[in-house]
Image 1 (cartoon, helix red, strand yellow):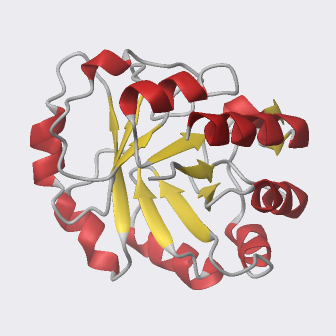
Image 2 (cartoon, rainbow, N blue to C red; image 1 turned 60 degrees about the vertical axis):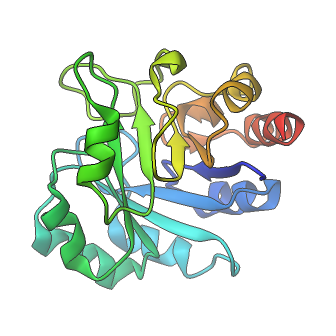
Length: 206
């Protein structure tokens, strides 16, 4: 099966269109105000409304209120929700919108148990762990720690770029890979040549 690609941290229309042109399957929009990749919902809505069909728009939240999540959904008409904080399964399922849950690979995490807990999630995203930082660290984690019996589509994140994504796909065989910093010129600003190189490496690994 072809490995899907989500390019996260989109803040500009030109970056979104460059990612789509290069073959990205999904675009991520960060609605976590503390992130340098935060995008105003009104801006994200304008971008999303100019995307072609068959490209999934993803809204990333970190411990956000239900009211704010609903407001963002109304403004953007985003397709899919990504929860990257300490949200419970009950919280994630209340929005009548498909979602997936991000898990940070802390030393004591039980990935299989967490996957079972989030049975309503469409997928599980595994990201690097750094205390106090919910994601976007630019760091990879030891892929050997990923259990082989995860009963969900697996999205691999954390420190991926053109230099290691082919190896990651070969070793982990994820459903999808998620990249942000690895295709940037600066935080929140994408680099077209890096996007193209990343997509070429994904294609080579498939």
